[in-house]
Image 1 (cartoon, rainbow, N blue to C red):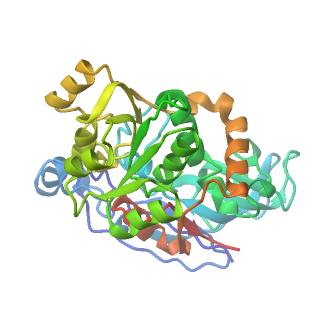
Image 2: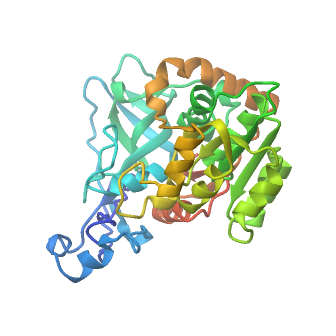
Image 3: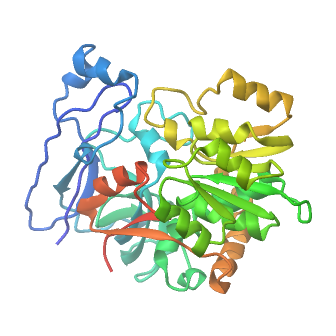
Length: 391
């Protein structure tokens, strides 16, 4: 039986959030797919009440009701070059919030379409194939995996992977030994300029998230003598210090970030892995050393606001960057994919040897994709947020 799950989705920034309509259609063959849907199409185009209320972005946070579960029927026969895949794991990530807008802010990101199947990172196994490059039983990944329990995909959209790289932990291909790990490793190597023996101090915001939790460990392995993580709960702070080896952690909800940074970074800050932006980043930048470096990975604190990416900085922060000659360039890992194979091997070896620990928050069932996505956007995950679809 195939089941399809669809998503009710609006441009949360600019069009407001409408009350969704959930539809369940029972069929002989079902398939779970997530789609975007506007339950009342005319309303999201109006200029009045709802639209203007959300235009500022203050109330533009996604909610589980933006998604709906739908059942569809797959074509029984494959065409040449196609494969039938069974989804094992799906990923939800902060960048997906940008895909909920008509303008994603990035040329390489396309917006999710209302009432169309949503996609993202996924890993699965081939059930049947009419593509010469793949056989039944192959484990494959894609950056554009449909949110479905099963899917018919073309071979050109898939990449075969070796489960031995992750010791059988196939969800790691969506995180630590996937695009997330590559972002952490190549971001640090290309933009961090860490020098062993130079007594560098590194600060990571969003330090208990998918990318930040890996980045902090790589900073330590690459030679930083002090790695400080900024998180949103005591549980997260405990995890990154006790489990991941961060030097110390700051709970920005309970502690004064500027004061704690001064205590934790007595020699100033040389490298900043920025996942959040906003006031936290302003506080970090204010204490960075001359000639230091910012790895601009993400700005999750700003994604629900109607601002461009990267978001504009305050005048004071701009002055700090200029007067201290701090480099701050947007980092896009896709520009460095020529280095991906070697980087993935290095990540794999570190994880197998225990030098890098992997944290995951796993939710079961495609029907919980919307909840998992919204929880991740609010910081409800520790490590990579994964949704397990099947065994």
